[in-house]
Length: 118
Picture 1 (cartoon, helix red, strand yellow):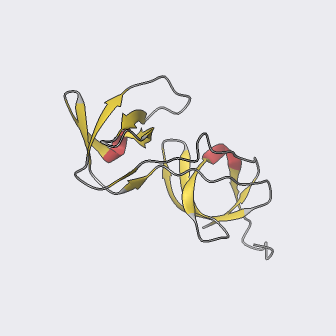
Picture 2 (cartoon, rainbow, N blue to C red):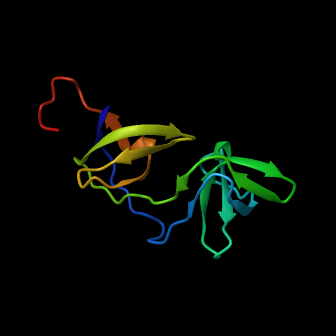
């Protein structure tokens, strides 16, 4: 489904964490405006927010249960994206340059079906 960006978004970092199913991460539960996310570090030292629903927690360690990429997209008001998934207040989208990434849901609104500009 197509969405329009109604609030510009800037990524916190240009670096991102990429992990596959079964990868081990260390984690901590930090306070966040978006419940359902945990702060994780991979074996290379890369750090990022990861949806808690994407991991299996075993003591002080967690293991990815699926593929994950923490890349946030930098989008401007009026940009159009395709919504692929919603997770804990964030959307995994495909932008106009065919790049996938995360953006907060509050920055998006559905495009009306009769809107032919997107």
